[in-house]
Image (tube, rainbow, N blue to C red; front, side):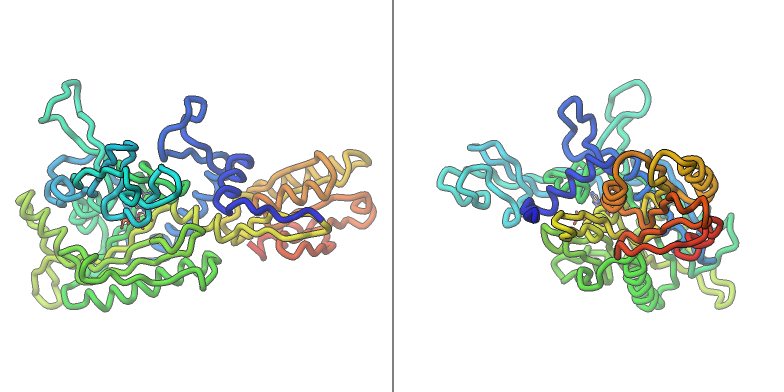
Length: 444
Ligand code: ATP
């Protein structure tokens, strides 16, 4: 029997992601670009399915949330008002001996490059500098002249695009407070110590929702959103025991926030945040009101009151959640003396929903399989594979998390049936070829 591989899980996942076209290193032929990744044919489908589920839950299935797609470049004063120009920084230390660079607040998690393995500062030759503040925003210039007046930033979060559009959305929709605005989009952070594959990258996508509420009802809405967001992860099929809450203590809580909880997942490299739920009070709108000189108050007709709304935010990362579903789905098991690798994705996020396979390339099987494939592909993302032994083809589909394989065999010509093989149990059943679409619809 082949021994199970002892390679660390993250190494196996990174190599599977490359081999099967989920995630590639950016600009790989030039040696790669630090902590920037590209999504391949299956990765783009997986991440899109994650985002689609979020959009469906947060926007399309609710009548109190509107969608938005704000630009990445914004007026530089946005980032002054938000506090990012002055305060969106991490403390950085350099080692004069080995030239490595660390986050001063994460030394306990960091590794000194000298051997034996120790934390930075623990070798007698370590020579760390005093911490310096390093702003994480990427700067660029708008227009042809590279001068201070032309500086703009690549947004480090999508939320500010929502705050500055809050009145536009309110005035152009039929919403009344309480209501929310949701957006999915790219964000950029010049992280000092990125890593762990697509967990912490310099370019990533956020899925953020800002819910505007009347002051005094904020904690109630905060609790409601906490419940809804945790439920969303469970519906995604993540293991409950790998999810937990982390409450921000007084030292972690942003000065303006009234309460903040992170949803954490237990990755192979430890418990880490995947989404934050924050009660941001009226801080953001008040800052933009002061800075822009535009009134951002809300007039509540029923009570005749005027107020600046409080904001409850839910903020997750599409790439980090894609990594979460990959880690959670990854399983290895011993089957007939071989290691079977299977990604047990929830069928709704699986990049390929079903594979259509002719058992052999003769006796009318390819023709019947092609007709079935053309029929099903109008409705689902399906894959046609006619090369190699059927067992090998099943394994290839297991490895990319395809929930169903539909095989057309010699008997199909006489009994009009095909074999459906299930990814997780490997059980097989015969169903009518005409019923395949309905069968998939009922299970997807
Ligand atoms: P961390 O403490 O991990 O740096 P954060 O508290 O700065 O995260 P937020 O600013 O609250 O993160 O961002 C919200 C979400 O955006 C995070 O929960 C995460 O899913 C995602 N995110 C933040 N930074 C990155 C990054 N560098 N790469 C990938 N995703 C990120």
